[in-house]
Amino acid sequence: MGGRAVVETTKGMLRTLLLSGYEEFAAWLTRRLGSAELAREALQETYLRLERGNEIGPVHSPKAYLLRTAINIAINKRVADKRRLGISETEKLLAIPDEAPDPARTVEARSEIEALTRALAELPVRRRQIFLASWVEEVSHPEIAKRFGISVRTVQIELKDALEHCAHRLRRKQNIR
Image 1: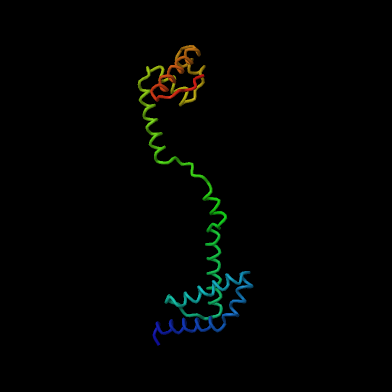
Image 2: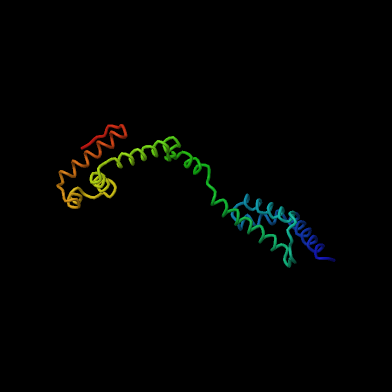
């Protein structure tokens, strides 16, 4: 008898054993797995694997082979099920609002950034540097005054003028302190 015939004989014998001992296998797996539904699903998948035509080497203990196959299938199913979200988790995720800006808001924001960049470029160099030190680098007014060798009041005036200029260029009314 050739190797293919042995495989077919092994698969046929395993299918016959699985079908004839189905209830016994199901009862044993139910006790082992704690779920009759999972046991039956694992046995069904075991049968389907036998039907698929995958090669099976020599099987010394057919009953143990079938049980081990079914247990492995059940374990893999449990792992896969843990990765899946349930209906309530899915509903909760779908209820979370999408805070990402829509395409129109993104284009609008980019346009405003470009307008602000142009407005800043129009400022005198020192005023622009003071503005960037304050708003981008978050340097304190006294530190900016020290850096530029000017008074804190002059820093405040430069910042006010820079904000007014940018607000005018952006065509917005700003609340300037």
